[in-house]
Image 1: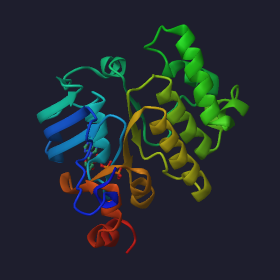
Image 2: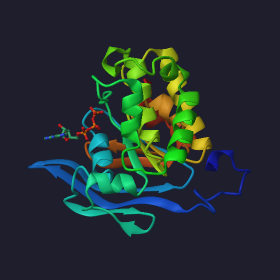
Image 3: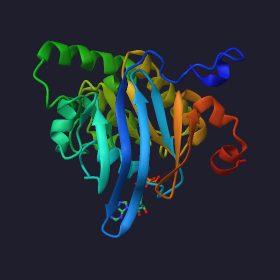
Image 4: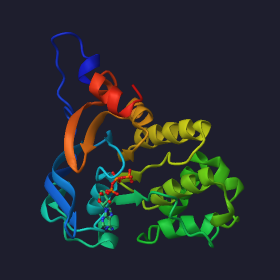
Length: 254
Ligand code: ATP
């Protein structure tokens, strides 16, 4: 619940009664001399949608890639369920329950929808549960069921984006990392993808959502962090940020 919707005088602490699932502590990440992320502190509680917003080059994707184990931090820590995980390779991070849907529809273009979904479950051997999860994502994205044997690269941009999210869900994530799921989508599909992210959260998956579409992200998120040139600029309940004049001016088009 957000502070804004609490009765007057009854300030409700963020995440009350919920476990902290992910913590970034004083995280800094560089590419050579380029300081992409500097001294970032961020917390995600179980059951939340947390969004990380900011302009081009703010360091959002770098943060996600560091959590996924694809990049190593220069300093600081990534703590998942109380254990430090920075330094663990990406394929082992997936086994811990952290799955990333990549930016820019990086699915396997020459493979079918079905084969892409199979690959999403590559770290798992719980065959019956995989079949159940596959059915669940095909219910979430009926369009993918219609296209199950189509080559992924021949689908529309929006369909490919759905497949990227669906494939990440087949990894059975506890924490789903979404990198710009609305990028390049028509408004009607943007609405659909954000509604689906809420459904995913309601089904028990915690979501860390990176978005340039700050308005849509803040509308579904519980809590938000604003990055500016690699540094944390602002954080707060998403509802409060939606009402913040400086956020409106910088990220919501006035
Ligand atoms: P966008 O919304 O435009 O994708 P972002 O917030 O996700 O931006 P990042 O992709 O994390 O930003 O980039 C942060 C900074 O790091 C940028 O200045 C970018 O140019 C730089 N950067 C990202 N990847 C690399 C790389 N592989 N090598 C060198 N610099 C990089």
